[in-house]
Amino acid sequence: MSAIERTIDKQDADSVRSRLYAWTQEQVRLLQQHVWTQLDVANLIEEIESLGKQQRQELRNRLGMLLGHLLKWQFQAEARIKSWFATIREQRGVKRCCAIEICHRIVPVAQSKSWQKPSFQENQATSASGNRLPRD
View 1 (cartoon, one colour):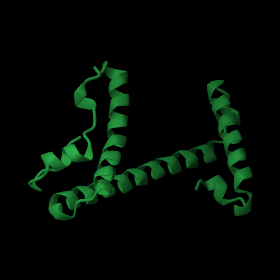
View 2 (cartoon, helix red, strand yellow):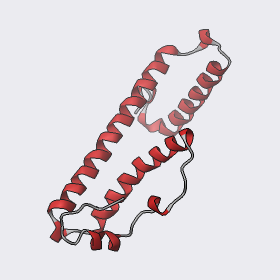
View 3 (tube, one colour):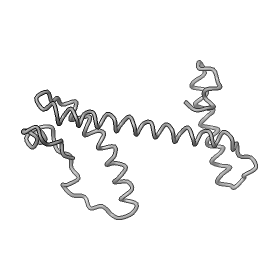
View 4 (cartoon, one colour):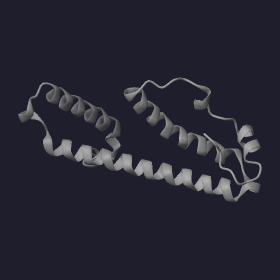
């Protein structure tokens, strides 16, 4: 929760979100028009810091979940379940999505079969020995 939201009564959450959105849009407008003197600099700094912390925490959570499921997949082969595979695929997909977006900005990425995700059954077949992790 942002600093602005913390200062306002919890019961008024919808109104808070609405006002926060309006405030951010006003700050964007001021930035675009180079009206530096009217910017709410202190709160802009706090909001940007808060956003960075939220994104870093989300990344930590996603990496922790991915590593946990990869370890389970690797060392508990006899107990593999579809939800582990789904989590691994989903968390890798988030990373892939960001990577593809960045690549599209830098170089054109050819659409090929190598970008397609395998099915759970395909991974079971390639990982039957228990020594291989799900492939992308």
